[in-house]
Structures are given as C-alpha cells and as structure tokens.
Length: 387
Image (cartoon, rainbow, N blue to C red; front, side):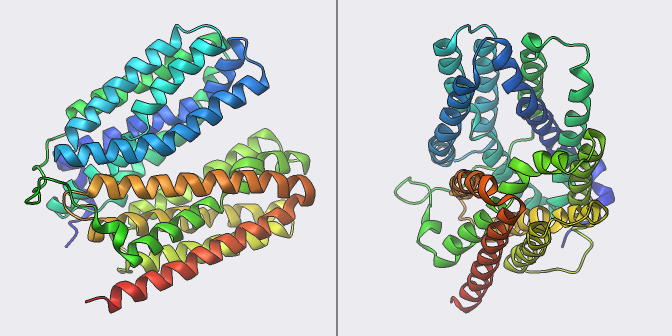
C-alpha cells in the first residue's frame, strides 16, 4: 500500500530522488531552448545546427538500449547512473571549449552517448527503490516537472543578461547538479543473477509488454504537432508571447497536479491509465484540428494531464509490475527507445502535414493517440488472460 504523500518529504530516499529529478529537468529545461542559440553563436548555420541535433537524436536510439543493458549486467543501478552523470559533465565541458562544426559535433556526440541512458536508469532506480519503500512514483516525479517549468521561465529571464556564446555555462552547471544529485542517491540492493550470470530480458518475448511499449510510444508521439508547431500556430493566430508561454505552463501545471494526487485517486490498472491518456489525447487533438478559439485553449491544455501525465504514470506503473528483476534498466531503456523512434517518425510526418494542411494535421495525431489506446486495451486483456 502506498504511504501518504506527506511522508515523502520525511523520507531520505524519496527526497534525494526528487532532487535528482529536479536537477535532471533543470538541465533539460536549459538545454532545449539554449543549446541551439549557443550553436548559432558559435557560428553554425541552420543546416549545421540541424545536423548536430539530428545526429545526437539518432545516437540516443543506440546509446539508451546499450547503456541500460550494461547496467543490468552490472546488477546495480546507482553506479551506472552516477558514471553516466559524471561522464555527461565531462562531455559538456569538452563541448564548452570546442570550436568549429567538426569539433562541436564530436564533443556533442560524446556527451550524447554517455548522457542518453541517464533518465531511463533514473526511472528504473526510482521504480525499484520506491516500490521497496511502498512510496508512489508520481508525487516524487512531479518535482522534475516543476523544475522543468522553472528552468523554462528562468531561462527566458537569463537571456536578458547573458550573451548567447556564454549559454553553455548554465547548461554545464545544470549537468554538474545532476552528477551531484546522482552521487547523493542511496544505494539499492543488487539484482539477483540467473544461473548463467546473464540478466533477464524476457520482457521482449511478452506480447503484452510489446503492446504496452507500442501504446505508450504512440500516445507520446501524438504530441508531435503540438511540440513542433503549436507556438508557430498560436503566434500566427495573434496570441502574444506571454499568452503562449502561459498556455505551455498550464499544460505542465496540469501534469504536475495529476502527479501530486496520483497516490490518492482510485486505483486504475496501468493499461487503463494509458488508455485514459490516449482518450484524453484523442479528444485534445480532434479539438485542435478544428482550429478552436483562444478561449478554448486553456481547457484543451489541461488535457495534457491525461495525454502525457496519465500515459506516463501508466507506463511507469506497468514497468514496476512487469519489468523482470535483473532487467529493469533494459526494460526502461526499451520503452524510452521505442518512444524516441515513434517521436522522430511523428515529427517528420507532422512537419509535412502541418505545412500542407495546417491545423488539420492534428487529426493525424488523434488517430495515433486512438491507436495507442486500442493497443493499451489489448495489452490489458492479454495480461489479464495470461497464466
């Protein structure tokens, strides 16, 4: 049984984990908006910036499954997480002193390869440790969302006094904070090994597990038009920068509220949570496809609590139950990799659709979310009927 949320602040494990999530998402909240600006300040043109970002995204799809499987072979989660965090700091430090396209690309490749497994490893560590203590995931993970929103807002203010070429330093500081938070995490018991010494990765032979991976990936990828083009679309419709920022913040705030109350709401199965997220996404994107008036946008943004929040909570709950001991990191990494592949494909599709059809492109995202919901229901039935 999950203990009351109030105990989280008094639990050393959960507090340290919350600080890790906050540190990770502060760094992410600085990296996403600042890094392209820094690349431009270093003299890279749009094509070169696109190449750096694309190569890094592709490498993540290799680094995550490799890094998480290596962690399972070691049988521990904190050690590989700390190693990845320290290596990431080194990679970003190399990047800070790099000049020219080739040197910047090489340094960013190194930083990406070592940093990519951090969040899957952190989530695997969280699910195991919180499960051992009977604590809920959502009320701890919400601090990552709070930190991300704070970094976005604070980063905008930072641009007023920091030269673009110096933007790498707050990014480096953010990664240093991740490493410090990872070092402060409490160790967990080592995972038991099989007789042959190999970790257990049987999750890839479970149809229900594959269906959950596909369902979550589709629902998360259905946000591609929103992530890529909502700001452009709302600007074209006359919304101010402040209004657009408030809409984005409202979506994250709704997600935070769901995470905060997730341990108090009536229990739903993991696949039911993913299906609920899919339903919220389907409704949200259908409405967006009809070019809703500005007055309707706050209500639609609140649906982010379902389309992202419920989907993420359901996925984590499923992994907590179904990921094999000794293969937790790999299972987490496989979900992250599948989601990354789906998002890359959806981003490419959304660009072409938005250019040709405008807001109607959201209809394709609604179809994607609905398909994820169907797969979640299939996964739920498959798991229920399995011996």
